[in-house]
Image (cartoon, rainbow, N blue to C red):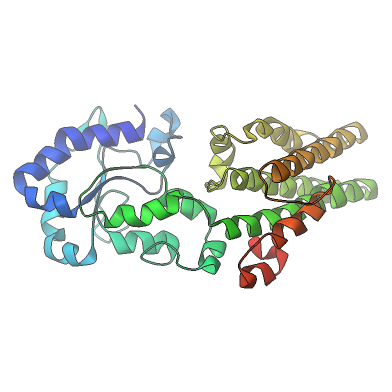
Length: 312
């Protein structure tokens, strides 16, 4: 059973009845669901995920004011829920915090991942937030939100990056694709610096993955789930296999030639999508030229005038 399904079922069969019996008036003030760290919140969990941090559980979010009034009673109620469900055991609650499930303060939850108790209010804040943190807080599922405060912030995040921020990030990654793959990789190979050449490839792959997520206006998750998440994207999910091949091929003369051609093809695909999505109006196939066009398309003057590499 997948973790999100387990959580929803545990809440429906045990959590909701307990709340309806003990404190039905609080349902209008609670947000309940499963959002946060863990592959189960992204839907990527499998049997291997069961060996750590996997349990029947859910989150109950309250405003800080409501937590001060009702937090202790809700924590006791949550602690009394069945310790074993569908063959999985609940983990002991930590007395010093840090739990993924149970009773949580809305403002503290968002502060942990966003550096603020609500969604970003400036383009600069959006620009410098780690995409993995945004993927965490926009993943999972909210089963119930009586007050709507938790979902108000979440809905802003679910809409994706503001367009100016997306353009800034795309521009920076486009520059790095050109520098690492099209320029530095072949030079390192010619010098016989094969270790440096492979570092160029790894950097190219990282920036290519980020570009795919940005073209889809989705947040790139923690690196070990980046490939897995790409498979569900509508735009350029097919680039996974060429990128995997780049990372796993050697650097013999024949392989280096194939890798260079592959990186050129990947950049051409990105340019094609920049143009088809009306993100760039530059001519030609030079991805660095399109990076400048992406930058020029930013409407906010302060963001546009930041160095092009500020998007990384």
